[in-house]
Length: 261
Image 1 (spheres, rainbow, N blue to C red):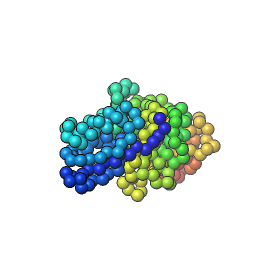
Image 2: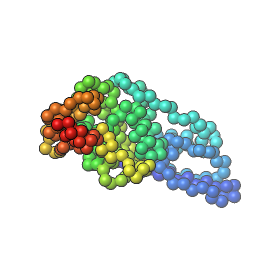
Image 3: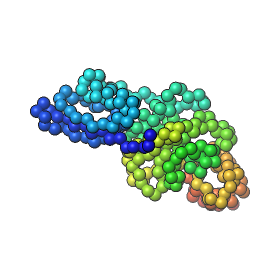
Image 4: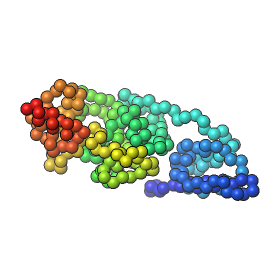
């Protein structure tokens, strides 16, 4: 099914049919959260029921709104980071549900980091053949879960099935995108701060277009080792390319290693 924004309009009335509430919300998020309180008067709901799942969620939401079912008072279960390649059943779907109820994009990034997600550029996804179907690559940082960390970063193991894309470029977007397999879910929430997350605030590296794959992989490996060991000395290869590659420590390390010569 093509990506269609589903809206839910909720109009509540008192016993004399005076309107007391009129809300237009994102349907998937509202169904996931459930109503905050029940209503025993007249009401009108305009919903988008495109699939059987939409219909089932609508019925459950309506039953809670009218008091036929109890309101959901329990918090979503706390997800635990996995450090192995074995996924629990429904683990990825649980992450998607949690991401649909965050208040800010910073909150989403914090949640993902707690679950062993790391940032990758679109270029690195391509190098690993993880890109699948994505949006425009320019300006986006993709969070993907590391399931096993190795001594050699080239042999880290990741789960490419679930990717979360944030716009870290100049254009500010009040949304982020979730790719589960090749299904896209858009979550419309703002950045909390004006000085939002950028490429330079993540662990990602942006390479010049003339660097070949072998050079990118060699640079990534040494950058990983230098981050792990502050006493480690960079190689001539790393020093030569350090001015061309954009990464978080670039400015500080240029000063540090130039002074040490």
